[in-house]
Length: 426
Image 1 (cartoon, rainbow, N blue to C red):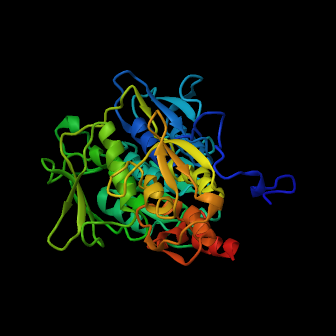
Image 2 (image 1 turned 180 degrees about the vertical axis):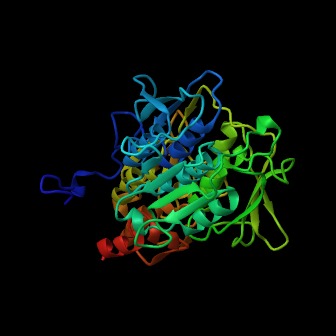
């Protein structure tokens, strides 16, 4: 029972029945993860045409919060009537030519950015805010980043430590009851403006060089720093560029590695390449070579959300019916933009589902007769963590024992997802 007015009756579904719109495809909105990366890059990038359209955004709370945060930094957001019907379509423009701090009406000096319970927004926007404070010519520039009660216990310490190392003359203070969490106050640590590079002096705001970051808690810390990495200027390593060293990685792989790969792929669409490197100790780093510049395309279309696709596909698997979604099939060895695209080949196919393609190349899944799913043993879902909830439900329905490993970071999301799933399944 979803509510007092809504119930689900699986007996109404017949084996082999085609679900979705008549003769069509279940068209999913864009990926939330890609959406927020594209929005930050579109806001930061130079816009040769003055504007950048980002199409097929997820119509979700996280996207609303991100757009509101960017609006606080001087971005004009225009909602478009044209574009894919499956998602939101917006046009971004910076009337001042670049992002800028806009102090609150109640304060002449402090800009407050509210992130509610949007972890992606908090981790992506904080490095942007630190950059704006570091490079501001106002010696009193100050920012407060805050969220709701749940966000105030979600960890950001490793990201803050990295920001303190990366941005010169910036001070980050914890303002709440829980150290290492929001709210944060970002100010200049010394009362003088940043030298102007046009005066022949190297910028002291965000210099090039190597900065270490612990990524064991969240890959979003890595992505947040990578999104601003191409803005580094000057410093002793000005000719080399900016390098982000992930200090606790081994074997050249980080926690939730596919989400870091996603960030790098979206950055490439905006003109910047982050090169992955592995040192002799197996530590992973990303180098953004000097001279690269973020340049926004006239439009960027967000790929359909792979984790959202897992829900209608799981219905097909559990009921023996057929569903087609607007995502191409990804084989187990492929490297899709979204790691969760592997849900079909890594989970559904071994469970006994038949996989096919529509005439447009989209993925079609047909569940086994009467929904008799196979157990799949132990599955490492570190590459598709957002789909572990859907996989857990199907595993509970399968004949035999299955288990999921390497999803510990799901305990520090908007809730403890592992505990919530265990409670609801049991």
